[in-house]
Length: 173
Image (tube, rainbow, N blue to C red; front, top):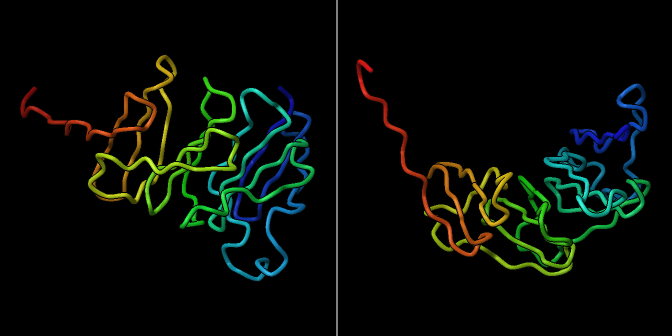
């Protein structure tokens, strides 16, 4: 519980003393030729694997990375994805090795820790997905926020998505 990770525009930082001291842990996070890019170290999401505490995933605007040694070093994963600009990412809390990522081309799921990916866009009006969240009580229920077409949910772990009803407010109530 004393170990914390933070993803920033400067890369990944790690604290082993509840935030008392932070250290940059970017070894292998971005190839040297990308360092000059303004978005080279822009980490959009960072998560510790719920089943393997030394496994950490970092989503960046330049791709997806995985560390199996507590962020001492990073390996790029998900190179088969068409769009490497990862906006949001979440490991499935109920299934080992399952990761969801989102971006401009929708939602993708890996069932093997990031080696292979399946696109899960059935039901979306727009595939520019900005956020994803898993229900705390139902492991197959996820919510996704889009850029322009609202909020969606899936009750089957991403196989099909449906728009959430618009919230209406009654005047005078």
